[in-house]
Image (cartoon, rainbow over all chains, first blue to last red; front, top):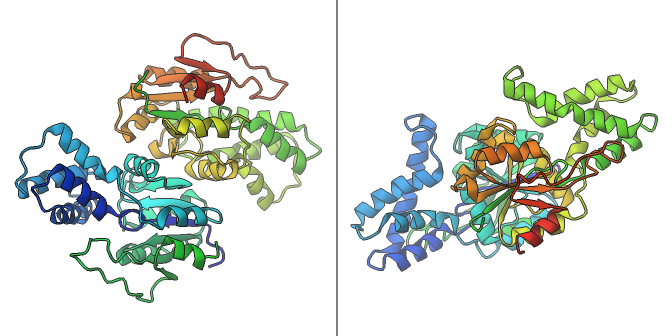
Length: 231
Length: 231
């Protein structure tokens, strides 16, 4: 593993705390709804929407637009009829304003001294750029499914990072808080590191963050990963 | 112009001094050749190669690969037969190691406090990322012709920046040291700023950097642009 050159990070849940940020914006805008349940419902629509794109039943669609399709449905389900178009559009961009986990900025800053650090997220480039500026995430490069027109876990995304940097797959390490993401990256020959985020879904939905033994690194957070990697 | 949100920078010549960097690497590696002439010849192959791609006579090809095709020809022309494959590959990546103009890092750092600053270069994503890390260029986002599979001045590149950030074209300002780039951006509705780089081609090939009156801003360098924009 001494030849790892690029660390490619999943973002939602791994680097930023989407649940707390979405819940807070929903609670402020819509005090009448269960903000925790609303945030979970919005996120629950995410994977099925991307699956439709990767299966070809929905054409290439950016995450901003998938988020909006899901949001419209969730607003209906929660009986919200009071928001105007400008308010809905602003709420939809809450995903551009997610707060980092407390260890993220410092951990990334340390890792950046030794590795090229980039995103490999299904979020679109504009979303990830706005988020990086908002949250002061010091990426060397922002890569997205948007560059490859395929969503993770499509192999084209993981192999695409290696190709962009003219590296062999094993010179790239995928860093994520989700085993499905890491399993797919490993199947492409990438190294992998798991980040524990037990509160990714808030306190009402538990998440098993035990070491499953499959990854080269298993770290409590990004600062811990930096220490493991000697920076 | 008060609504400008994103500054999209041309890179080669505008932000980094390709001529001095290439000349220095060539002089060190090949003391027997005229490094100034070699650097100019290498760069002179650049536009015709991209034109072939945009015209469809050459399929989509990354700048790293175009640089290599041109380099092989220039090495032949200069009678260089002593380099091994690893040396040629290393020399080809001299474009990843270009030094910034003296005002660039400080100017970009100032502009970043008020605007989103990104590249819009024909250089490929890996090249631009490696260069940013090498030269400490503080981009919010690295955008490239590689994202659009079209080279500037194709309108898809300029309009693509606005689309990625969900902005109107006039909310994006193209910043470049080349009128052809700015003319094409303006035709797409972008704002434009010209940066004087009289020594872009070294001291043996002159460049007219007079204000042609066509751009919203005409600045001596990136620090001067920052001052004009009030940051």
